[in-house]
Length: 305
Image 1 (tube, rainbow, N blue to C red):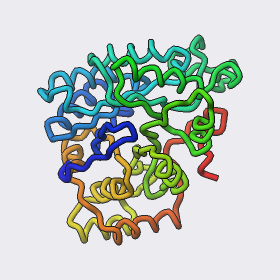
Image 2: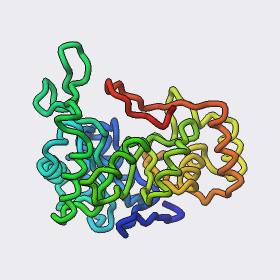
Image 3: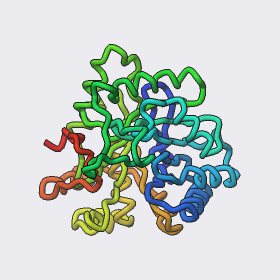
Image 4: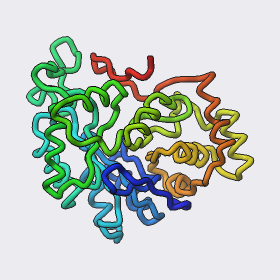
């Protein structure tokens, strides 16, 4: 990114403050997007097994000419793989055609039936998600298995995603937990600032990565008057302001785009003043909404209460 900022994780590893998200990107477009991003100067790429596009992401990394050791690469353990952590990591490494991940995240604190009727989203006869009962398997057991990955050299850091303070507290209190997650990747933007979660993670040394930082067509953050006013005063785009606000809060951020001009533009962050950051904070006082809210059939977003 233009400011070159990074954050140090609790294990001593360093994550670039700005990365490229790859969710909902088709094979050809994600290949081009990652290639363009790396040539633009991005050094943080966020992937996941369930996105179904790890292979083109890996191909783009390989063909970019950027040394692998210069790229911070994240992927995620999907919910149908919680009971076979080692095998799922190997699958992602094979898809991405790399020897190691910089960060491996548990994608959701929910275990789906690995023998269900679909490899990604198995359902019950009623159409509900086919969730494994907690007494049979749960995210605490999954985390215990993930902790062993650090000894293999195939993962540099481990973390979680979509965890509320409730899940983090349960994880911390479990006798099998010996490693604090390095990262918690969650939806964060001015409509969903997650103040409680930020306080908890700051107090416990867990770095937060913000996804969906620019809103969506159903959450037009870039049209907010405050965002537009700050952008005009700084000579920046609304997207650049939202990205810079996320970094000002101490979180890394992974805006997703497959449009070359936007990928390049998103890279041009700025150092936001406290005054402007606090001004953007005001948006949540009138509008609060979540963009990503899948119906798991169990409670996930405890901090929305």
